[in-house]
Amino acid sequence: MSNALHGRTALVTGATSGIGSAIALSLARQGAGIVLHGRDEARGAAAVKEITAEGGIARFVAADLTDAEDTLRLARETGDVDILVSNAGLYEFAPTSATGAASFDRHIAVNTRAPFLLVGALAPGMAARGHGSIVLVGSSAARQPAAVGAAYGASKAGAEMLVRYWATEFGPSGVRVNAVSPGPVRTEGTVAMLGDHIAALDTTNARGRAGSPGEIADVVSFLVSDASSYVNGAVLFADGGERSALPG
Image 1 (cartoon, helix red, strand yellow):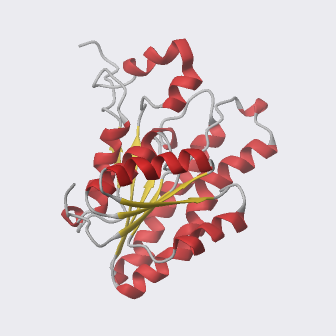
Image 2: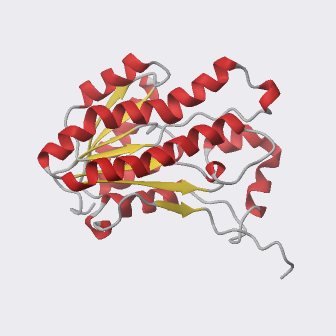
């Protein structure tokens, strides 16, 4: 445990697994009180137990981010925060012809509308207090097109554009807004999705391996800390670097 974030409260969405879990644990270890969001009460209780076992402070609020009213309820039950990490994400990788209206709407609801509503509900309080940090967890899919996943990429690109708008809107009031854009990360979700093809993640970037949730959490920790006090409206790529198209 450290005291870098002592006295601050953070809401982390999608905090019961993968990148979100690593982020919540990292911020708690730095002294922040954590409001964990997820959909599953049992997983939420387990995440709270993990943090409190290390001496941290945490509570869990369940909410369905595909529902606008439930998203706003999450903001109300969270209360005042100093840090918002919008990490919850939905990805259904399919070609456009196999992506129906309902799937497209789910992507926009979770990946774009939910952070929009949470920022709208929580950032004004940060601005009134004169400080705050907001970080969205984006995706390399927002800038690197593929043959599948257009709805996901579009929803993440929209969220990254919102970061730039919010940095301009809230920056003068002392609230910084940034994003981290991960490349392939080895999580429970990616392992379940890719199955026997999981090794392919290790061939997509210049590092020659997929990232870990902890590595993304480290970038988020930097962005919410005082060490990044002059960073605002940035999208930091944490993707291992692009591979050269040329041999060697």
